[in-house]
Length: 252
Image (cartoon, rainbow, N blue to C red):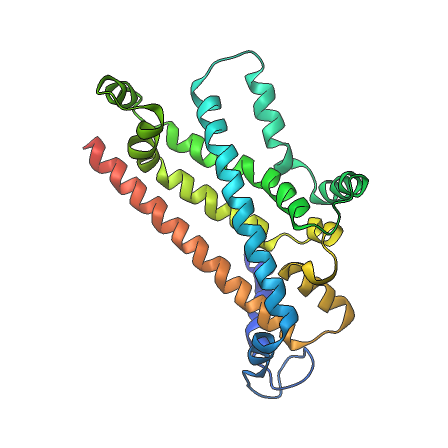
């Protein structure tokens, strides 16, 4: 089943390297002309820049909100804790089409459709649960006596967090940040509702290109996106492996 779902991706590479003018397989020849075209086209460069900005800001905001939320939910006990977990998890389980429609209805009322900040806020809401879950997983193995030891030695809350806590939960933080960035960078439904004109994101640009003109440049962009996501996921796997080895060494 997994092979059946992923097999069509194998055709992206030859179609991205085609020398023809349309998406067809088998291809008439091999050429890098479409990669050169997307590098020279202002529309593709601008959409890439928009996606990178939105993804970076959304990831940063998700960390700012998600890390404190994870600490509070992992360690604190208070009435309604399960309800808070359920509310935070809603953006993950809710169909993204519903999120897009609701976002468009809300931001159209306040005149923010077409603003990058509207997309950033929605992407942040979608990424916060991921950060909360990954950081919460790192907190399960965190020794809280280190915090008391730091306080007894005169360190303040900010210094304790930055110099003791953050380095130890870094694998969960980095993993959450990578997944949050991928979610924002690859998201197309919300961007289709909220982005207009020159502020279209890269996935939105690809989607528009598929509808308007089926060009091999789309396959070239898709191949680059796949490679970029694969690099990020490989980095996440490397960090998780290092974290597991570090935990085993400490346990030994």
